[in-house]
Image 1 (tube, rainbow, N blue to C red):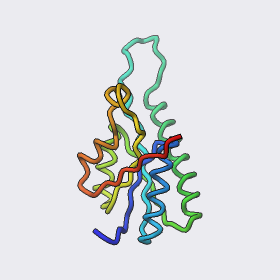
Image 2: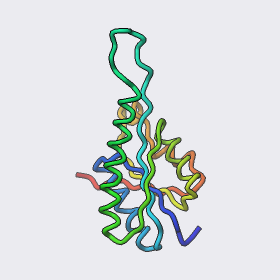
Image 3: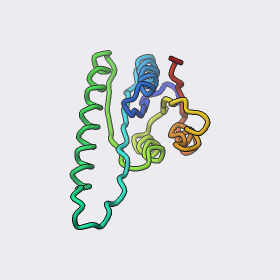
Amino acid sequence: MLPFQKVLCPTDFSAPSEAGIAAALELARYFGATLYLVNVVPALPAPVPDRDYTFRVPEYEAALHASAHEKLERVAERLRAEGVPVESAIGHGDPGREITRIASESAADLIVIATHGETGWRHALFGSVAEKVVRLASSPVLTVRPAKE
């Protein structure tokens, strides 16, 4: 298990996920590991079968994927400037399942994931990707709670 050679860190590009990236960067730097950034593009529901409905799911998914790729590359370049090797991947679908699948397929030694700190009804309604990752992952998971504002 130690030293870590690959540290996987999912990001949704939010402020809380930056805390996870900072912790993952520090660990990758300390162990001389590769930092593996992951973003998951959510699955879209099937459109309503209405002939007047013009929303094009494949084009929209392609745009989401392209946007995620662009954002991941910006973050990766910033981290590479810190002297850490960075790879990235984009998953599609359920974030918790995709993060653990990618971690397994990439043989990640550690997953570092930020929590969003939701409690009460927000937590009950939206659930927690971090909790799901902790439950499903075959590798160790470090959860990082962002500092209170």
